[in-house]
Image 1 (cartoon, rainbow, N blue to C red):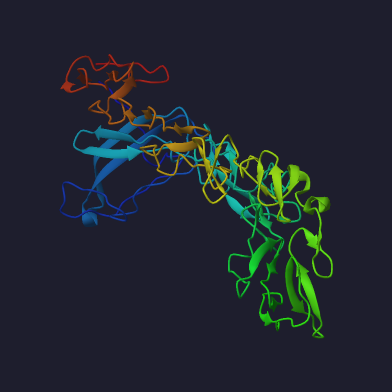
Image 2: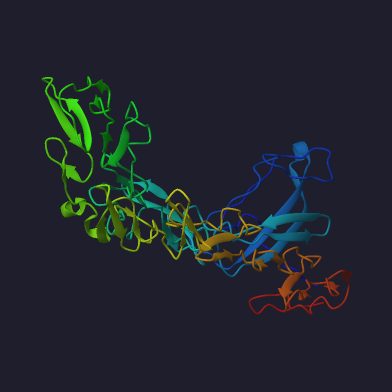
Length: 441
C-alpha cells in the first residue's frame, strides 16, 4: 500500500518542537515538561477538518537528527463551542515505530459563545452595564436590580409599594424599604408602636396609647404627664361624683367621674353625647354608673372600637401566600412553592444546591429548575452519559452514536471488529483516502 504524507513544515496553524528527551522510550508530557503542554493554536475561521502531524526524530548529537517515525491524522469537528461545552477527543495514534495518545479539544476564545463562537459577551458590573453571560449561549443576564438592553436601567421598585401612608419608600436594587414615621414600625410601617409597653405612668396611673405618644390617667392626688406630682387633699370642697384636688395656685376643684359634671360633679350627663365610640361602632349605650358601652362593627374591638380585629384584612402576603394571624395580633405568611421572605416577596433560587452535574448550567424557574447540559450529557440533572464520551473505539477508530447507549465504530485502515480491536482485514474498506485519492494494496 502506498502512503503519502507531507512534512511538518507545512502547518498553517503552527508547529511546536520539544526539547531532547534523553534515555527514555516512554514519555508522559506533563505541564511545562519538555516544552509547554497543552499546546494551543489559534485560528480565525474553523475549517471543520485539520490534519495533525507528528515527527519523531533520533538525536544523533554531532550528526544531527534522524527521522524515526511520521504520523498523520485527519481530525474532524463540525462546530466550535464554548470551552464549557467543547468535547474532549482522545486519539490513540500509531506509526511504524511509535504510539502516541493525545487529547484534542476545539473551543471558542474567551468571551465568545454560541454554536460557532459568534456571540460576544464580556461580564461587567460598572457604568457600561450590569450583567453576566450565559456560559452556553452568551446571552446577557442582568444582575439583580437591573434591566434594559445593557442592564443599565434600575427600575423604580417603589411604584405600587405597600409602605403605609405617611412613610417614605426608598428604592433599592431589586427591592425597596420603608422609612416609618415616628410611632410606626414593621416592614411596611403597618404596625403602630405601643408607647405604653414600658409602663410610663407612675403611682397607679393608667396608660392610654396614642400615635407616637401616650396619655396617663392619674389616680386622685396625683398629677403630671406621668402622674409623678402629689397634690395635697382638699379641706373645703366636697365632690358628689368624683374627687377633689388642687391646681397650681392651690385652689380646690372637683375631677368628676364619667357621666357627671358641675362644680361638685352633681349633674349627671350622657357619655354617648360626645360620640366616644366613633365610626367603627354600631351603637353607644349609656350605663347607670355614668360610663358607656360601645357595640363595635364587625372587625373592630376595644373600648372605643378603635382597633381592627384582623391584621390580615390588608392582604399583606404576596404571590399567593396565605396570611395567618398570630396570638399577638400580628400575622405570618405561608408562602407557595418557589417563593420566600417575610411577605413571600422574593423568588427562591432552586439552583443554589447546584443540582446540575457534569458541568451543566442551571436555570431557575418558577417551580423548579432546568439543566442545560453539555453535548455529551443529558437527563434531568445531566447525569446520562454519551456512549461515545469515553472513546470506546480502539486504534484511532471513529465512534458514531446510535440510539440510546448504542454506538458503532468506523475503523481505520488495517483494523476491524466492533471496537476496531482486530488487526487485519481489508485496509481500504474504510475508504481512508480523501479528495478523490485512490487506494492500492
